[in-house]
Amino acid sequence: MFNTNASAQPPAADYAGSAQMTEQPWQQLGGISTDNTKYPARASVEGVGIVIFKTKSGFRGVQRACPHMQATMMNAELIANDTMVRCPLHVFTFKLSDGKGVNCPGFKLTIYEIKEEDGKFFGRVAN
Amino acid sequence: MNAATDSFVLKGGHVLDAEQRIDGVADVHVAGGKIQHVGSREAVPGEQVIDVSGNYVSAGWVDIHVHAYGTLGFANPDTVGVYQGVTSFVDAGGPGIGVLDQFMELLGHLETTLFAGAFIRPMGLLGLNFIEGNVRTLGEVPITRWVDFAQQHRDMLRYIKCNAIGDYGPGTLKLTKGLAQILDLPLYMHIGEFQLQNPEFLLAPEAFRIAEAGDMITHLYHGNLGKVIDDKGKVLPVVRDAERRGVIFDLGFGGYNFSWEVAEKAFAQDLVPHTISSDLQQFNVVRPVKSLANVMSAMMRLGLTLPEVIERVTRNPAKAISLTDRAGSLKSGLPADITVFRVNSGEYEISDCYTKSRKAEKQIEPLVTFKNGKRFNADMAMGQAESNWFLQIVEDRIPERASALSAAQRDFLNSLAARLSSTTWEVSNAERLDIEKALELQDMFHRERSAHGLSLKDALQAVYASFLDQPFTMQIGLLLVRLEQPFAVDRLRDVSGKRPLAA
Image 1 (cartoon, rainbow over the protein chains, first blue to last red):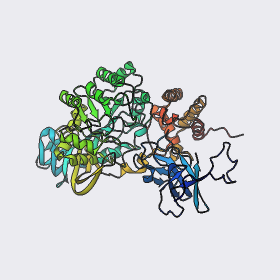
Image 2 (cartoon, one colour; image 1 turned 30 degrees about the vertical axis):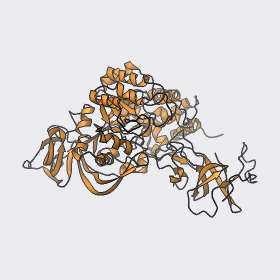
Image 3 (tube, one colour; image 1 turned 90 degrees about the vertical axis):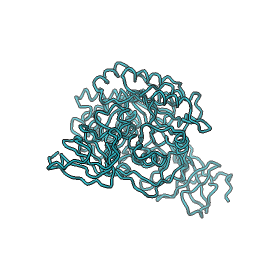
Image 4 (cartoon, rainbow over the protein chains, first blue to last red; image 1 turned 90 degrees about the horizontal axis):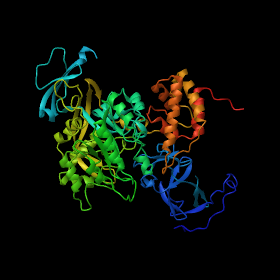
């Protein structure tokens, strides 16, 4: 079991200084191992629950509950060539790039960048 | 329609018609788009014979609660109409007085007859869950404009809708009741607070108190705050009082509004909806609503008999919206709006809007619909097609349909872009929608189209084609206000073909 209170990892050089605002530091994910084979999967970033999806272009994390009616995003499905995620309860659909609601303007899903390094998962808020 | 198909007989079906007290095998003769006769009669020479034995035949179904227009509507509303056994439906709150002109221009020519259950707010239902209660409920009520519209388009209006939700007290309900009285229309109220966790004042009981005979309350079996039953499961006295006064109870299944637990408890105490409606919209057609037929199957599972179910989608809704002169029965002389369906036996699962489902042994399946005698074969998949309900702004390219726009439409778009670039707006978030700005953008749209002498329909289609692949229809101010301003302006200029080249 991973320690959910793992200390913050320094940001990788690739990301440092690339944006006008300070980017969030990478955090080791809790509640999941890189041996995990079944996705979507639950994990946590600094104690905040997220759901990780395995897409064609790598892992992506989203907040645990749909911002509409708080249904679990564990039941959500990847659509549009894995670029969007859709909650099955009322088909509210969000872009995995920036979390914006596609058919539900005004609604936004928190998105997490996820990377795998040294056999561990790290994540940080992407939007 | 040619003579060969003009006159036909549906032979050997089991006819259900509460109005004429028919419940048995009979032939239905149709000519000239009207019902001629129900019963056995010698075939008329030249009359086409359609064998429907083994199936049921009823008047075309009337769904008094769908969302065809606006932010909840469908690219092709007929998919949940004549293609699913429904020959007439009412848009429950899509348009308000500020957009009824747009609504009529865009949706006046469906195969399914569409009526407006107009919303108290000028813009109509906003569709999504903007938390600001005032945005969801009360708006300006320009009485003179309402009266003028009702005089000109009396037939289009079937009720006035408001939502008994939010935390602003009963003002909206009372004002809407007043407007409905002024216009001599029924009041239609949504009950069930599905958003606020702890409102100070629950409006559902107030809705039951305000409603008079002929007024309607929808979402009878919802499981949100403001249920028809108390904590012990007993039907509230205020609900019984309304029932005794002649208030009409509507099912309104919807995406939030049907709970098996509430339904079963209320049904056990004989609290039964007078009308069965679907509340079909973008966000519930895939699940849990699917179709009016699915909702009817749910009502059979609950304990209604087939004739009781059919009465609640034919005679009862036709009476509720004063449509008995043209729908709800197979009486001679009425338009030939007919639904042929069957009742399948098997193992089916019917979900409510929460997490509960029930096993059912019967399923109602529409087969063929006739609208004024014109035939439509049922297609239950069309409504569920993603292109029919997934309203997505096309961001990365210009929609193909834009290439068909006329020079006049492009000129208009260029002027509209110029006008929109003179203002700014913030894209709404879940807590806040700038409704004033939406109305302002709508005014700009109208001023430009009027300056260009463009018809309302052509102007609307030009903007829709600039942003949407599918022919959704939506309040134009709402469409614009949900776009980022620079994107909207650039796209309109691109489509107009007059975007200044970058330096």
